[in-house]
Image (cartoon, rainbow, N blue to C red; front, side):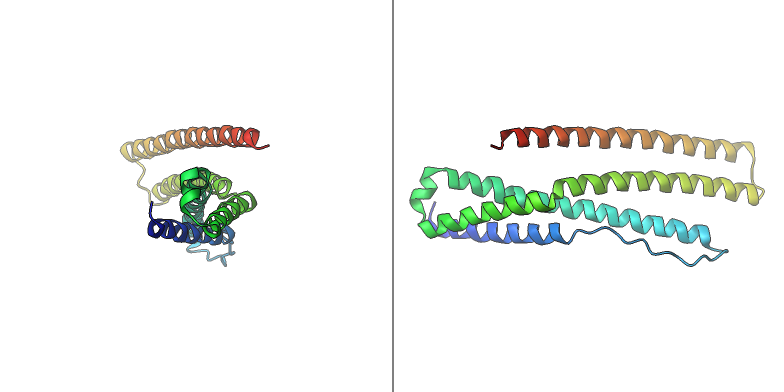
Length: 196
């Protein structure tokens, strides 16, 4: 590797680690703002609030996932580069020190902010919110059918089927989240056991 490529690796690592630190530090939760009840549009307003909250949780999960990936680059790829004697021989001691600081900073930011755990928690909340939104839409549809006097056997059957599909989707999503959390917990335990 030439010195120019190493300079590029160092620069990209610094940028990736800095971005990951910023993203991790500023990935905060959505603040629920109480809507003033409007009797005419109360349900619609509440469903819109639910949709905004869902979107925010999805964004938090995405930001923390990106941050975690960038920190992984800073920790493992740069750390792997430092571990090879060839790279250490080709670089100045200052450059090796800078790469060491990048790995240290990445590890510190990862341990302090835990973007992987934040992403998993936000994804779990997003799943619950999606399920709540489905239930609300199903019940809203049932209420609408009753009050508009449009209940006949076909509409009632379609409504029941839609609710059944929603419940099955909820079950699959819960299994998916549980599987991901179990996998993350196993990986975290293995990582903790490796540390001295």
